[in-house]
Image (tube, rainbow, N blue to C red; front, side, top):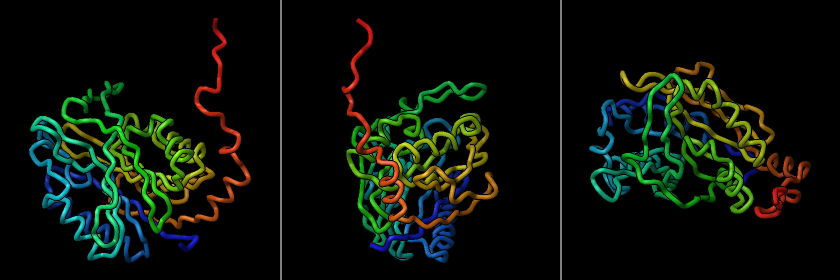
Length: 282
């Protein structure tokens, strides 16, 4: 494996039109391959964002259905790995789906699937009330996958607020690059998006690739945007100039830099295991 590998992260405004979103994603894939990227990360809900309650359930499909097959073919034809964050995978019954991060290799094969663990049940201050668990089944498995880009840790959006998941991806499963496809709300994005992403990079000494939805999807839904790639020192190495635009950012993942940061700041040797601390209360 070469020490330096080029990656790309996409930003878009998905709507409730599967064909339109696929057209946009195809254009972004072409831009990424032209830039020499070996992996393109697409944001959460890349293929569909419903405009009405229950709309996502009506289009949810299995992983071998026609929607995902088109994206697998796109990866194969373009010879690029795709991180497809937040696919609406058909759930165990008609009332539920899984929010699934699908990793596809450059031969069009599904290499890994991660089902979002932390569901967004939040009354956003000054915003809408969200109840993702009302139609989504939470996953319970951490997922890592070796790739030409390094060892990838898969997450989705709201997972970002739970550092234990990222700690385990790094220290128990040796992740080098953390993928965070997202559709953050405008209110929470303005307050916390960049801060949380940089914190996850610094505390795990991993690259973080955060592909974001942006702008207004419908009358009811708006996303913050601000697609970022962050290095293991917490430095932003790629950022889309316009937080509301559709496009890609590109950066080179330097695996030797990961090793250098971890050697000079050996937190893996210094960290204490869970259960190490004793309660001060009696």
